[in-house]
Length: 386
Image (cartoon, rainbow, N blue to C red):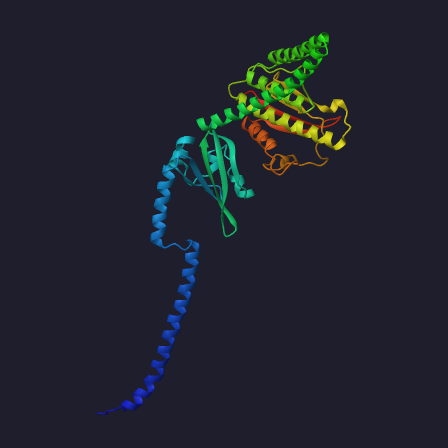
């Protein structure tokens, strides 16, 4: 039998270095784990905007309840154009089912929607007119930006309800009030002239002046009554004629013009908006040319309007006596909202005209007239294009 023994002191000397190494390594591992955990935690907190999991759950429930109680329709898409969220009101307005629309490309769910353009431009739209699923809407659209990148877009919209209709009627009432103000101003001048002629005893002159004014208004009213069947459009042209006289201009409606009753798919108020904006722009361009050139020919002080519905389209054309469009102009740029050669608060007219023309599957054409000024033409198909 052989017995081998180790002194306890020697065994302790051999174990102590390993214990020290293990202790140091344990602290190193714990420290490294703490640093990695802190880094991952910061990245995770940044990704979830600093919210705790419980707060995220609560916010999700709040958002779901809030969206379901909002009367306006709300939809959002991701960077690929897929529908990510839609509330109850949006489903009711557009007539779609949420379960059939979620996570599908928005172009397939709502073919008329151009919300994907916001992903490309990164711009914000306010109170624009849209027609989706045969519903006339007023929409606001904004991009969703995270860390400087556009990761989606959201749109809120509502029907053009009674309040909107009342607003439009108020705008028309203001236009009529402006027309009456112009007529009052013009008649005041004529009454002063008549008063002076009466005091001078020039009764023949009084009769001649009254006859001229009566003949002018009667001929204009009769012409518009025979040419334009829709009273709203005819009234607008009569008002713009008075406005032109007040500005020292002349509004001419082409003799061959004709506009029968509009098709049911075309709203007369939209035609008034298109034609009214075209005429207002023509007034501004002509006045700007007069101020710039001082001595301008009398022919260029007139604005010509042509209305035609002989073919399959309603054609609205306005020619001004201004300086014309720039030699190298970008039509796509001019129809953007807020872009204008006038004051910075302008730039809505052509944008609105193009929006309404696109709604009816028509188009806006801009060109320079051969003689002087610009020619603006809007084509509105009478029937919906397939």
